[in-house]
Amino acid sequence: MHVPFMLSRAQMRRIEPLFPLSHGIPRVDDRRIVSEMVYVTSTA
Image (tube, rainbow, N blue to C red; front, side, top):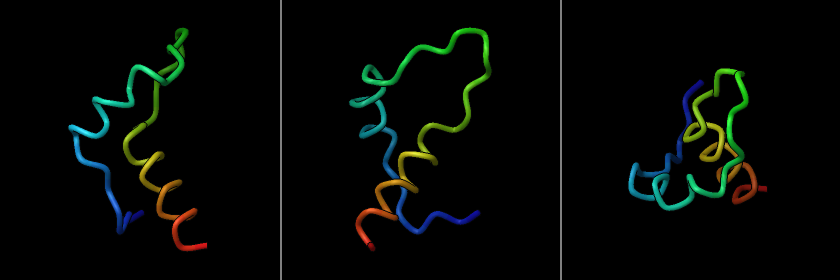
């Protein structure tokens, strides 16, 4: 899926400490997920 808005790597580094830790379950691409949430809320 193409995300028209994508957070930069520097922006992700700033917010990564706020994410919960992974407990044995592989993480999805957090950058893509957060970018999609920002895009949806900004266009709604």
